[in-house]
Image 1 (tube, helix red, strand yellow):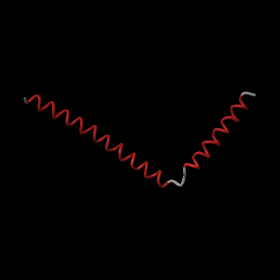
Image 2: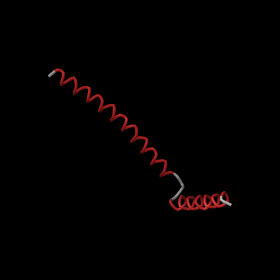
Image 3: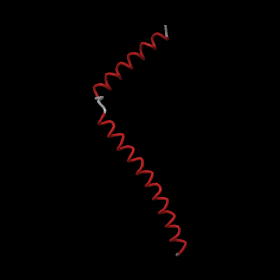
Image 4: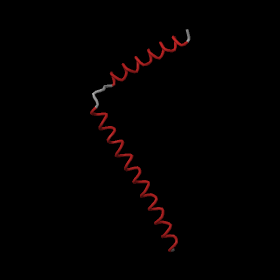
Amino acid sequence: MIHSVAATNVKINEMNEKLSVIDVKADQAIEGVADLKESPISRHDTAYYDQKISEHSRQIYKLNNQ
């Protein structure tokens, strides 16, 4: 029984360590979301820049294949 309790304590400690890592990652994700909310960039802006990047990529591809 003592061995069983000791093994359970080891597992609990391992779980606590894993939960601490998850807490840190959750805090980082929350901070990242807060940063995104403060960002002045909108979906329209990102779609526009994505389109421009695609156009430039096509132009570069055409130039390289000439």
